[in-house]
Image (tube, rainbow, N blue to C red; front, side, top):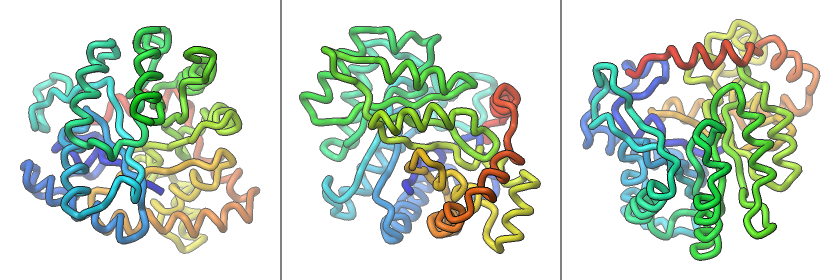
Length: 313
């Protein structure tokens, strides 16, 4: 498992129950909390850390923590993303204005690459297009794809993409076809997959078989999965935490994903990390796992409509 910093790098996010998890949202308070959770994750054996330019100060927090702890680039795997810029100015309530703005242009890639390098330097292993969609046109922008290929050649970075929306599977399929100089461009895909939204499963398996690393984000559906009645019942039956079972159900999938915890407290992290042992139990009982996934599954269009209605808090 890895640790995603979407909820640790900025004061506002769309996770349910966030107001109970964070007493103060000042820059220094968030930096301290990020360091606490990063310390706990590293001590527990977590070595994959995922950030993005639009996650507020996530890259800066992560880079500062790595250097402060004397952790070398070879000791961790660091992934980040370009394509959104953070515009909330460290506010939770933006009075209806967006918290982040998408821009998949070549100029924005160049600017954000420089910003990522300033924050993370040699720690970067994987650089991802943030929320690639057909609408943004990024997968058909030859200049952008060629620049990403040159970053791979010049800096030794792996190149990936993250996806969102009901068309995740279609975007992943299109990404598998993208080549620069007859060489496949993408080394990884990061996708929303959880007990509620499992529609991209076949596409993720195809990506894995094509040699891509599969990374799963929002494995708890921003907290919504914790209220799924079949999941709660199964967790009680197995005598395990509901969050850990939800994560385990993703870990046990045949596309062998890296699953990102979105914990913002050390207690949440401790519970999340129990998923690894529970996943072994689920792999040993594929009928139980298949039944759980079937009983929890939500229609994709409805899932994404519900997500779009979540409030930043």
